[in-house]
Amino acid sequence: MKELIEYIARSLVDDPRQVVVKQERYGSKYHLELRVAKDDMGRVIGKNGRVANAMRVLLRVAAGRENKQITLDVVDPK
Amino acid sequence: MSQEKTVLEVIAATVEEATAKGLAQLGLPADAVDVEILDQGSRGFLGLGGRQARIRLVIKDQSEGTTDVVEAPAHHEWAEPVGEDIAGLAQGEADEETAETAREVVAELLEKMQVQANVSVRLVPPADEKDRSLVLVEVEGNDLSILIGRRSETLNALQYITSLIVSKQAGRWVPLMIDIQGCRGRRERQLRVMARKMAEQAINTGRRQVLEPMPANERRIIHLELRNHPLVTTESTGEEPNRKVTIVLKQTQSS
Image 1 (cartoon, helix red, strand yellow):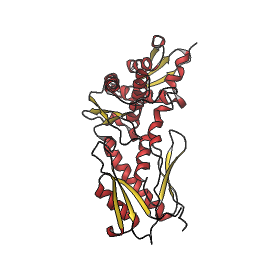
Image 2: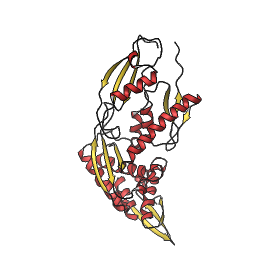
Image 3: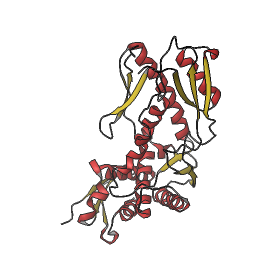
Image 4: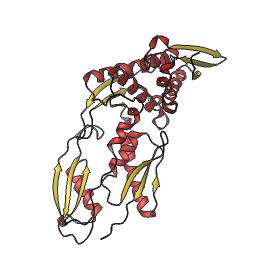
């Protein structure tokens, strides 16, 4: 699941080295936090969140294969 | 706009079909018109690869039936979905290299989604001079319904992400379509039937018919299907992702 988002994010950004995906577990649920360089935020979010939402849709399929639930947030760089 | 001759251009899969469709639209017998074949058409895939047959019907005696050649929005819909998000990228043609990139990207995504499937690609040549060649990625395997999703949601997400990645690598926008076990072709047939049904409903009720929200490629199919309809026109309204096709009655023609 994490690898999927890492692959997509690294393929879309200008600076793949700054792509970081953190996975956390809350009981049976998983949560992913995606961080990219400031200038690449638009690329992984997209107009009206379209790219982020498409990633969530694919992520849901990946999680479903393992009978897991997972959410994804794109987090602002500090 | 009264013309000397009344003409109707019809596009359909074959010349025979186009002629029959045109005559049905005009409500005229075959001997009331001259048929000019503009394009014999050729077989293709999903109506994308092949050219459709184009004919022109010229009414011999112009006592009844007036129909202008209709221009409906069609091609710009196809160019819409990804192009707007990759500002600054020139629109490019699909070629062998981008096709191979697309195959690798889809295979990689599916592997990471833990979906086992065979991925193959081919280039679909443009349907006409206004169209562009297109990378068609075909995915085959067992039980791939999860890859399509409700209302093709998953398939469209997969296609969108793939387009973005391939276009980013190519440095230009690459027209690309993903098909899963022929579902695009099935959906296209469904949409064509629905388009004609809703057009009839618009005529019968006299009211505009608003269809459910659809992605650009599906709206395009509706526009194309009704492009030469004598009584209705189509337009898209609303914002993505809730853009809808509306079928409107044409103004009754004076003269």
